[in-house]
Image (cartoon, rainbow, N blue to C red; front, side, top):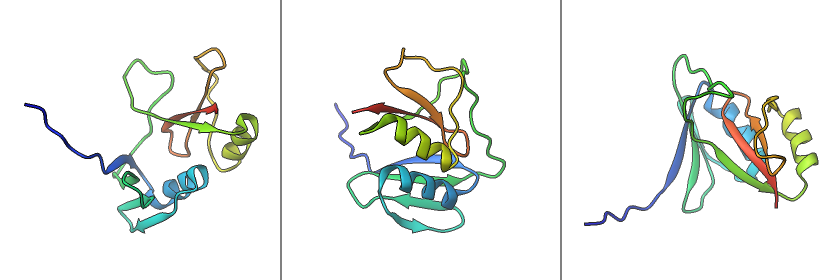
Length: 118
């Protein structure tokens, strides 16, 4: 028997939901649809990106042998996007796999994500 479930949100643990939602709002253009001290949601489509406060949260290391989920984004101008995201608080780790096909960045709380020219 197959279970058919509809994905409604991707929830990311963090220390400060509002600040992280604002960072991703700048990255995606999705609007914040709900925000309180514990949760912030982006987007009004069939899938939302959300952030959940976890006391004492610390972002993952990179590179790290432990497996982590991450988000991939396609952008029109890779170099300009990277500069803008770094100005918004992202960091670009020294370790960059993929032979230039994508760039690994970390958001202001250390969550990894990739941007690629599209």
